[in-house]
Image (tube, rainbow, N blue to C red; front, top):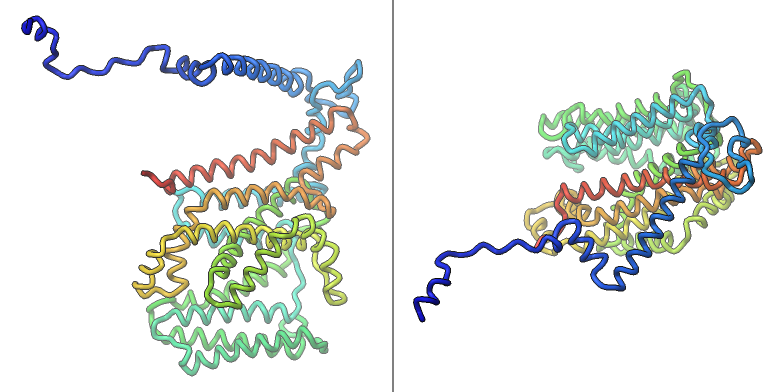
Length: 499
């Protein structure tokens, strides 16, 4: 009996048998997910029938019954009445207006050049393998906005003497910071103490000159008051003292070119903004279409992220005044609808400005959108800061890092990586919210499409649906691209927590 049983005992491990063919592959997935029970089978058949019916209707409307060419509305009118198919001829005829608004036809190359520069710089920063990221970031965030402003408007702005003095005061502050970054330079040194005092005097004089009316005179080609010219000379002398002190400190830290860079940037900015490049002046009331949508969205995105970081850090600050200011700012802007912000910026803000002082309508909308989005961005980033373990802060403190070194090198990189989905979600919401500027008279993409519905040459039953589908596709294309890049960035940085 034992010998008969021993013949059926395996002496080696047997490999597991493969699953039945009906449980794996496409057929197995369909059977398991769609037809597992009788109720699932009925629901799947009904849903499939509806999807097929809807897909056939959409394809018929968008392709088979659509009109792609035509000179006017008669091409899109069905012979027996009704709605007919899509009127893509309307989109084709109005495509230039949808992209550029009523921007002068001969100057539209400037918009194309601006978009190409933005795409190249953004791609160089977004693609990991492209080198020179620091230079690319400086060009994108420090140089491109002003070049784009000159290209789109025509440049040749008129600067008052007080504005020139303020620009050089900012350059003086940046130069002082660069000089103080050297290990052998301290604010207690007599030249640096004088330079800091001159910068403070320049700032106070600019405040007084803005509140006091005084006679203007020509100096270096600009109209200065006596107070603003003294403020300008004080800022210039502060720059000279800071550069001289930093250069005498030796080669460690920032070099001579680094000390002179803020002044060079200030001079280049003034020349760029006030120079005559032979470009036709185009006022912002001629801007429209996708151009306005991108200007509002890109400006809001570029401004809201750094502002949101500062507000998030301020809300977690131990200084009561800073924390209170950030809390009030965030809660105020988060508690007000964006449409109210736009109305306030467009209609109420001019009432609070001094007589004769006004801001461009588009600029008011840009500021309102940026501040509104920054409040939401601050809360997203604050969530990332709270997710960083306390040991990271303590480790940075143990290494003797300053507050800003700790945030820049240790805390913020981790916090921003954790909240990439929230940041991109805020960007996508901001991009879609740009359509609200149509309420205050700015013709964005959706507003330009809606204006096209009133053209007597293209009034047909299918024109509104076609235009709205086209606008929806453009919005979806940009939002989907941001979403996919967000997913790519998350995978590249490996932000998921693996068990």
